[in-house]
Amino acid sequence: WRNFMAINISASVGEGGKNLAADLIQIDNQLRKVGMLATGPVTPQSRVAAIKKFQEIWGIRTAGKPDGKIDPGGMTLRRLNETATPLKLNAISIGTIAYGGYGISFTVPAPPKPYQLFLGPSTVAGDYLEVTAANPKDMLTAKNQLDLLKLIQKRNAWGQTLAVKLFVVLDGTVISESTPQNLPCPVQPHTGKMLPLDETNNGPKLTYQGDSEQGPFYGRMFHKIVGFDGYFFKYGGQFETNNVHRGFDCITYAGTTCDAPVTSMAVATDLAAALGATKCTLEKPAPPPPPPKGAATPPKTAHAAASAAATPAPATIKVDLENTNGTVHEFALSKKGYFTSSVETWLDPYKNMKLTLRKLPGKPALAV
Image (cartoon, rainbow, N blue to C red; front, side, top):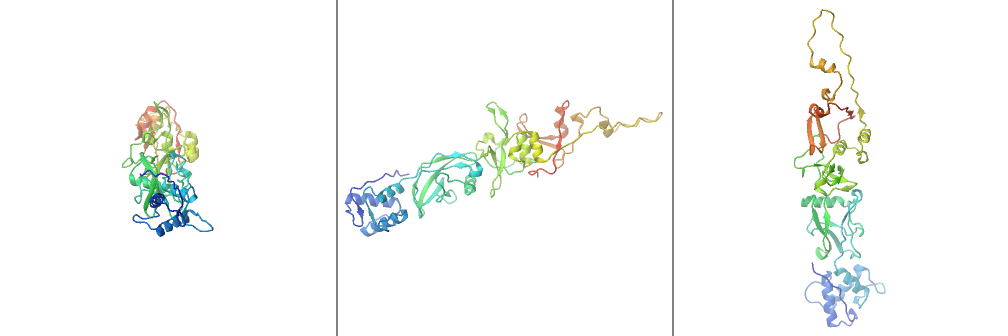
């Protein structure tokens, strides 16, 4: 974009001014840059009208009204130079989702209406957010967050870095644009179908978020934004923007599937308590009475054999997991993420271990 420079004049220009030729050239060019003058010949009347219009926008008055004159070092010249100079868009930071998700600010002052401010990759319709009335220190809030997310969706920029600018626009014409700043986009949202996990057309394969060679990092969770069809991954209250960390660990997969509070996904007992799960008790039934003397020994049935087992070893426990047809759904490091297996197969490695089983009061929230 053009590098606008501040101008200086040696004497006053406009109504009642000295109107020196060199000063007129500078003022006319600057008035064109800020959208007050059209290209082509300029008359003294059109110049004064443009100056008055600009003064009216900025609220610059002499004796209660715009005077149509620009003085060296005066307020009108100062505002003219400011309007012609692109605003400075500051570096973008990641913030809390509840407050917009990003810290986006710019240096003041911005020109007043009818000038508009657009934030985005371009000024093409649907590719920017209008932030004319936004707080310069925090342009993105929960109110316009959805618009930004839909812009990212339109560009399919999930998990990528998007270069955005701050544009000053007047009547559809771009007056200036800032230097671009990088916006780290959230990783691709998920459909929210968790049991069984929908892995079709859902972006990169979800990865297990546990201990790694780089050190510990932990399972991400879902965040729902009203008006957006899908669930965002978050950690620490912020959008996850790194595709490497798009996934769950064992407990956040279970907690997210059941729509548990994010504050209850650190310890299994907390998760169970938050979901109202109750312990399941396995009791060894009494052995059948011995047959009468001289009676034939009846053949052992599968049920009888299981009931008469010496100990309720996990491998012999047949659990009916309601709504999942006896299938275990899990996120495990050893299995590189999501994995399904039958209850019997899943229990097999734990033959000599004690397991705690809890039953949910109802179907998990994100089960289909």
